[in-house]
Amino acid sequence: MRKVNEVAGNFLDCWQKQDWDKMKDWTQFSWVKICPSPVVKLQKIFEHLKLKSYEVKKEKQISETCCDIVTKVSCRTLRRHFVTETVILRVVCEAGYMKPDINGTWGVNPHSLFRKN
Image (tube, rainbow, N blue to C red; front, side, top):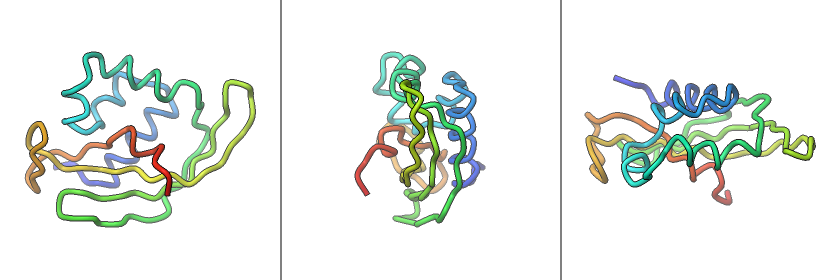
């Protein structure tokens, strides 16, 4: 069974390597299910920010099937500016589409990184 911190770390590693296909494997099931082309969507979401480094700061359990991973990320923009921000990865455990389940599979909701803290 996947662990929350493993899922978040693998998702961020894929972002850093710009491996959109593998990134999909660490993404929330429901998010993938509603996207007609999840790999293309992930690329469009993240390609403008080249992840240079990240540091997980803390893990906050929201419920048995939901966890927030507070992470400091440093990125280079398309204009070659460097930005460092704290983001929150929402990691959800699901057994199927919109079915939270403690025996399901953990995955990151990609849009959660762009929420305001």
